[in-house]
Image (cartoon, rainbow, N blue to C red; front, side):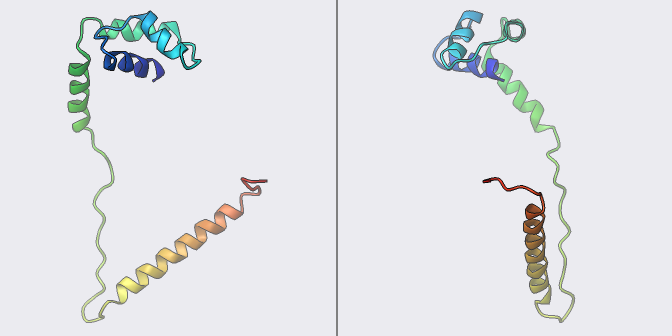
Length: 113
């Protein structure tokens, strides 16, 4: 990911075709030593390609990927009960929050000790 980020930074800086030295210089400026195999693999994959077209193709592929999170079923309070379902749902949510807090305490260590 670092190598890709450095490549994109070079492109944003005006270099339409960054070299391995450009990528190494960017990463070296923040104290990161680039893996030469990854740099070479990235440059080989992007050789002769326009990065904006590559990104656009990736975005169109991601559009067809399901993002999960199916629709939740809405619960009704029943007929004539008059809003009791909302109060029960609030109580259940508070109970879940309390249980989660208790679970955090049972880990056996404290983050700040």
